[in-house]
Image (cartoon, each protein chain N blue to C red):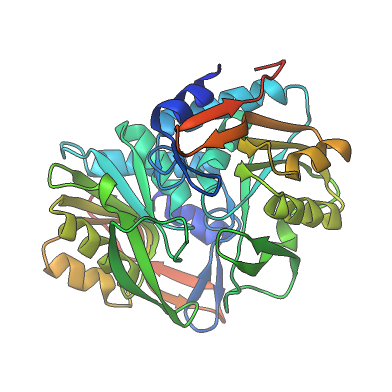
Length: 196
Length: 196
């Protein structure tokens, strides 16, 4: 079991409806030491890739993405969810459905920050059905940049987002893959990973 | 002139309507080295304060707040803007008006993460009229915790948020205070600061 799986067992809370709450250390209150430890692990798993940009989506991916950008010594870009009157015309746009919030957001990245020369590592805190990740991938590919990898903190392995992305050939690394959860017994079953 | 003021002059863009765009290094694409440099400066300006939590608001404050939490070696909490079906009952709530997005958001922090024992440094990227900052202050004070300081990257000194907060006695440190901008000449006038 790796450090993130141990932390999820210690401080995560399983709720009915396959909800895993990690708000005490990952996506509301953030343990910066853990973020940095995750970043080091992503650095190891994506070593040798010519990554020059880290991309995430607001809001809860930003903390991890900052730590990852630091270890790769590259800039971090976060895709924005809402339309702002301050946003200029030239944006890449993707539609992203949110199951948590039961709505669809336009996700935008300025064209200034992605170009065919870029090699992008996409980072997010959660992967379930893959809507957010697919939105970010479509933005990177629309820019002509290369998706070098997808780095996720917690993947819900019982939903199909990760499976589809791996089948498409993306290099997807999830630090913890939850294959099953049970709210009644508060149990969590992690997938064994070769390189974990 | 300090490092942030220099960077704003180099890469910031002044737009009509007193809009200062810093999206190439601060709030869309983020320069992590700059975030860390700002964090070191906040550490210096708030030295000796018994800070044990850093609080910010999603989304563009998160990057800076992570760097600040790292140098203080404390957890970071970000207040959330939207209502989520995943949020439990026990939340501190503040109403925050957004001039950028022309709407009002409920801003929430779980009661689990703030208590009367806490000494909080509030961090954000921008201060103009102070709506977001006042929302965060009201949440900290509702919890019984102490506001040890307010750390801002860029203050619009020609709006009154900062003035009112200083008059109320808060220890407010803004790394760059813009007293005037002119979109036609692309000029920015910074306020001189004693400790800068």
